[in-house]
Amino acid sequence: MEPADIILSGGKIITADARFSIAQSVAIRAGRFIAVGEDTMVQRHAAPHTRHIALDGRAVLPGLIDGHAHMDREGLKDVFPSLAGCRSIAAIQARIAELAKDKAPGEWIVTMPVGEPPFYWDLPESLAEGRWPTRQELDDAAPRNPVYIRPIWGFWRHSLPLVSIANTMALKLAGITRETAPPHPSVTIRKDAAGEPDGVIIEQGYVPLMELAAFHMAPGFTHAHRVAGLPKSAAMYHAFGTTSIYEEHGVAAELLAAYREVHAAGKLTMRSHLALSPDWRGMEGVSMERLISGWAHQLAGAGLGDDMLRLSGLITEIGRTPDNALRAQAAPYTGWAGFNYDMGLDRERAKDMLIACARHSIRAIGIWPNMLDLFAEVNEVVPIRDLRWVLGHIAVLSQEQVHRIRDLGLVLTTHTNRYIYKEGHLLVERNKLPDEDSISPLRWLEEAGVTYALATDNVPVSMFYPMWQAVSRQNMHTQRAVGERQAISRESAIRAATNAGAYLTMSERDKGAIEPGKLADLAVLTADPLTVELSALKDIAAEMTMVGGEIVHRAPGTAQKS
Image (cartoon, rainbow, N blue to C red; front, side, top):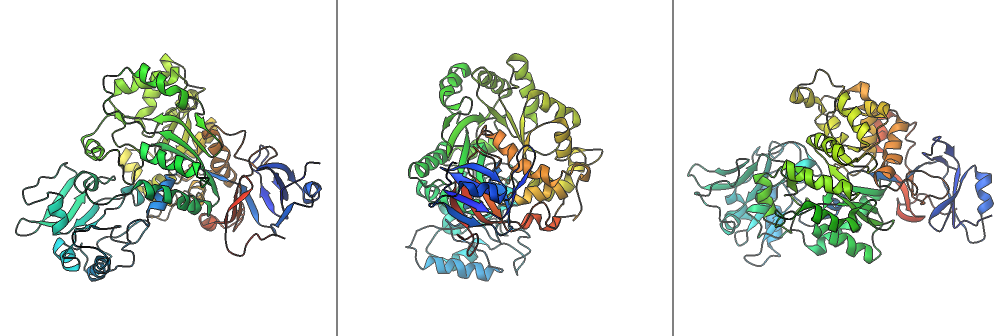
């Protein structure tokens, strides 16, 4: 009998195996499960050195797999001082004046956005004055320093506009005067009655532009910030049972370098599967076949790496937009994104690139609906069905599109946080739909046999929110179900957060279920996801999380050694 390093016993272990069986105990040796079943059977693997953990009836899931995580962002949110709790302009001034005390004259003061994280709702109405502070008010708080209040990353809230605020010295350093024209139609440089910039900059786009294009001289995230932030980010995701992530939006060179440094130092606790975000600048005349063939050794199939860090495949978009070209001027710096802004290609060159990817067995990823037609065209030249190409961020799909996705063998990732919870009530009118059935149509996908994975997009970090949204279809604004006929069962939601995530990351032999031979990734939960009140499903957290049999998260006083 193989001796166990660890035995967890006396729980409700939701294995998510092929039969969705429920067990009482698991035994772990050398980072993998060696036995799963009833307590008496698993205890046969006990040895003098075995560590025992009593579950006391708690529910256990396989480690959750986030299909579109943007995990790195979470650990960056405390790099710049927060304005949380500032409910008035006077309070903002006081916070900035306090920061100025530790700054030399001329040294930048850069803060997080006005409002309450993580979503920054109801601004500026939630401020006592009902308006944004002006440059003069920031001057009063820090007369010797340039001050820049950053805008939100628009996908935190999924509503516009984005607003940043600069004082007089910051505007001068950015070269913004009364004669300065906005660099893009989405930007408004607000003026006062005298025609001078009043410090308030308004953007009608979800991705900040002026922060990168105009205020690039202000301090941003450094390599050291990213390296220090990744372990913090992982810890926050582990607290909700996530043990693996997929970064399908791709990573730019600066983020990939941070991941590699953290992993080399032995500090990467999250199994991280990354896709490449290409930077096409300077390669306009290069043959795509030549370029892609040179990348194949590291991007083809499951790519290069190990169980903790792997890079494979690449993402692209159709089209290059002027606003993204402006953001890309800051490259290699990417700010909050972590991916290259100017990753798009014109349609024919994108098709050439994708055909080369198919020929060299490189996985391609698209996150906008227009990529589906292009994938189908590529399939007519080189079959892609067995390559597990990815279509992400699904919002609206017709039944015909669902069937095409099935026939192409695509793997899908969802964005229920946005397209059910935050914007689902808007999609019928926005997309001229006859009903709500095509909004995040998970039931149609399930019936067609399409593999779809749940994802957080970092808004917020808990995978239990997408699980709850997939089952309840709840919309935050209307407090009603959106497309309720597309609701799935709790079992299906768990499978989408475990089995499907393993398939998405090409690691289903090693992850996604609690069964002998697989990596010992699991989460001991605060509530049973199969029986808790539906409204409380989103509130589940992890009392303990293990990656490869190592405890990476433990809430105080829980899951102690017996």
